[in-house]
Amino acid sequence: MKKLILVTLVVGFFLNCGAQKISAEKDAEGWYNLFNGVNLDNWKFSEKEGTFSVKDGMIKVNGDRSHLFYDGTVENHDFKNFELQVDVMTKPNSNSGVYFHTEYQKDGWPDKGYEVQVNNSHGDWRRTSGLYAVMDMKNVPTKDNEWFTMYISVKGKHIVTKLNGVISVDYIEPENVIYEGMPGRKISRGTICLQGHDPESTVYFKNIKIKPLP
Image (cartoon, rainbow, N blue to C red; front, side, top):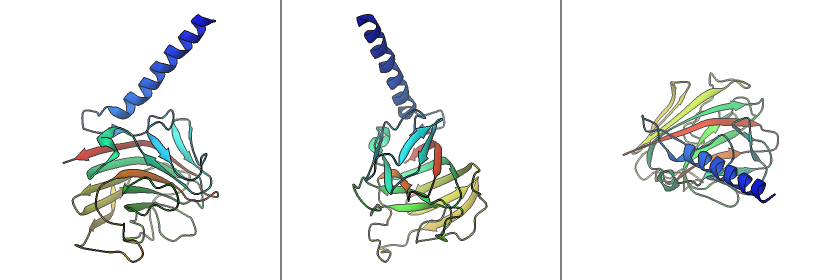
C-alpha cells in the first residue's frame, strides 16, 4: 500500500512538472505556451468558480460572469510589448473577450487594459477582433462552430489585431487619451485575461501563445 502511494505521488509530481514545463519554455521563435492543455495551473479566476474548465485540451468558457487571468511565471505575467496568438471557437449567440495590459480584479468587468472582442453572433453588435468601445468591428469573416486564429500585437502605442492572418484593427493610441467611462483603458503593461460573459455563452480557447518583445 505504501509503495502504491509513493508511486502515485511520484507520477503526479512528474505530470505536474510536465504541465508547468509546457508553460515555462519558449520555442525557437520565442513563443511561450500560456495554457498547458491539461489544467488551469498558472491561471486565476475571478467571481465564479466553474465558468472556466478544461476539456479535451481546450479551455471551455460557460457560466456566470467571470474572468480568467494569466498568473504564471512567463515575464512574471507582466507584459508590455508582445505578440499573442490564440485559437478560438464560439457557439451561436456567444460573447467573450481577450484582455491585455490588465490586472487581477476580484469582481466586475476588468477596469484596466483593452478588451479584444470575441463575438460572431451575439446580440451585442461589436464583433470579433475589435477593440471594444474603441475601434469596433461590425462585420467579420469568422463563424460560429469553426476554429479561427486571433492575433494581437502591441508595440509601443501601436495595436494590431488579425483574424486568420488578415488585419482587422490597426490602431495607434493617441497621446493622453481618456475614453469616456473607461479611464483604465490605455496602453501600459499587465497580464492577459479571458472573459466569461454570461451563462448563455459558450466559447473555447486553445493554443494560447505569447511572444514578449523588447
